Image (cartoon, rainbow, N blue to C red; front, top):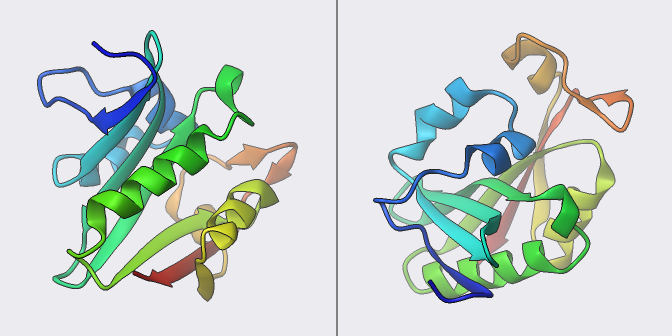
Length: 151
């Protein structure tokens, strides 16, 4: 397997659960969308980044999960995965959406850097839809931010 390459995950390969669970701690929620999704992976010796996306209508695609292994964060891997995602979906959809938490601010800033704009805030989403509180940097995640970008 070629190193330093972003590619769609081969269906015969195991799903990188350790990474997916970094972005969403509910394996059940991930399983709900995984079979209908595409997985872009960033591979060094092993998979260190993943972006999961799914067409949700004829005209719109959603980023369902974006995660990078902690040891490889702040190395532009998430940005490279987003760039590859846009190349994959451009021409097939008119817009892309992504849903993220209100904290920490880094993922939200990354999406905005790529041209996503906030279109909705779902108050207390993570409190109501997850059994256990999600704690990020010592703060409980509460609200879901929905962003959209025209392609």
